[in-house]
Image 1 (tube, helix red, strand yellow):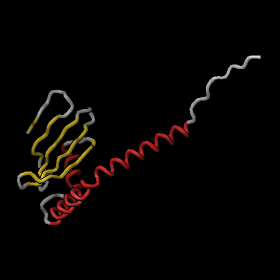
Image 2 (cartoon, rainbow, N blue to C red; image 1 turned 120 degrees about the vertical axis):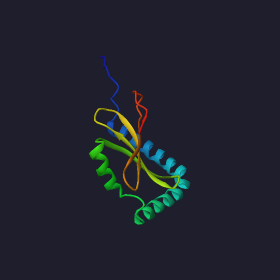
Image 3 (cartoon, one colour; image 1 turned 180 degrees about the vertical axis):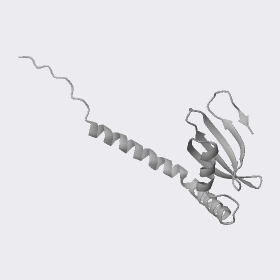
Image 4 (cartoon, one colour; image 1 turned 90 degrees about the vertical axis):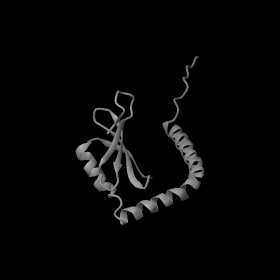
Length: 127
């Protein structure tokens, strides 16, 4: 008598468990690497809060509302930086047509200081 046995397919639950364990291990390693940067990030957050309280920057929600009216799209990333004594919001924006833009906005007024297309299509820095 001959029995034809095919190997059993991998168990989805065990595979998901291995993937989750690897992801957790990766996050723990990353957290260890970023721990020194956390203190710097805390300082940045405090500086940003102080600038908001002092009226030096618009609240992010206000800035994003204004930005969506003039430049509709999905905001992917926002950074607040100090450049030559001026607060600048740097925003990465994905438009519905698939174009990715990086905009620099005056954090006090919301004025677009510059915009640059990021995805290799013709474009470049625009003012």
